[in-house]
Length: 142
Image 1 (cartoon, rainbow, N blue to C red):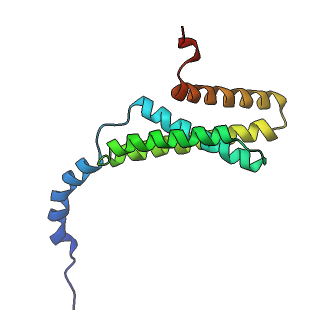
Image 2 (cartoon, helix red, strand yellow):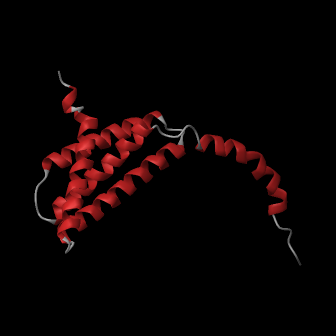
Image 3 (cartoon, rainbow, N blue to C red):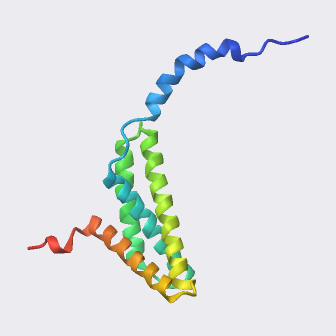
């Protein structure tokens, strides 16, 4: 005895629900500032992890990471219905964390002094840009 397959009967129902599901999960993409904030959270997460690996305390990095996490959570709270917004922020954070981990690896363990120097410089530039998000530009004071 052969049983009928449920898909042909359920297909119209799924197709009818798809546009509603897609619109609930998508919305406007995050602005560049939000993506930068997420990237900075990833950078500082990598700094805290690196500090643990090399057995140094870095309370300032931990404080900045936590402040960036709070700022990111505030942004996400405003976009509860927009799943793609959350995904885009998390992707930005994960990419930045991975990039920073590679920079630390090059800065600490690469045998080429030039690559060490370049990686250390990029780490400083990344963190300086993130600090300007929280503190503001130092040259803006008059």
